[in-house]
Image (cartoon, rainbow, N blue to C red):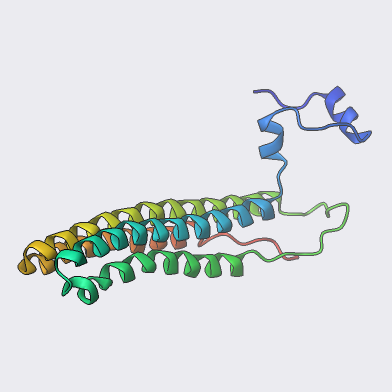
Amino acid sequence: MTGTTNAEAAYCEEGGYCNYGWNEVLTHMSPYGWGYYGIGLGLGCSVVGAAWGIWLTGSALTGAAVKAPRIRSKNLISVIFCEATAIYGVILAIILLTKVQTKDLADTLPADWENDQFYFAGYAVFSSGLSVGLTNLASGISVGIAGSSCALADAQDPSLFVKILIVEIFASALSIFGIIVGIIQSNNADFPTE
């Protein structure tokens, strides 16, 4: 990929169409846009992961409860573990929103403007939100599958409930690891305020 030529830049300054490819789009997007996209992806993927896990667990729980009605209330813990992945996404979204500090930007930026810090903060918030969202998506699905197995196994043999619940706890721990990594990634994301 090549950058914008002088002729293309002059055409852009005259009000022409300026997007000459993905290179142009991705390098000229506002760091605030990167940050907000990361927050949205993190929150959205976390909620989708939780919903997918609840769907998997709930459908298996409902089916298994036909054979053994005693498992209905005991296996709701699997649904709670799935919902925790969405809560972790909300927590990270709140943390990242406090990092994105907007400033009234003039048409021209001052000469000493910290462009590197500005773009680093946007990319850091984006990568943090994306990694937490994808981790919570995977964790929600794995908790749902483990919860489904827990409900079906408990309907067959009540002694298997605690054993499979431990596997479900390990699947849920992926979300905690993801949010820790996300906090570390966004730790130095400071948008310039002056």
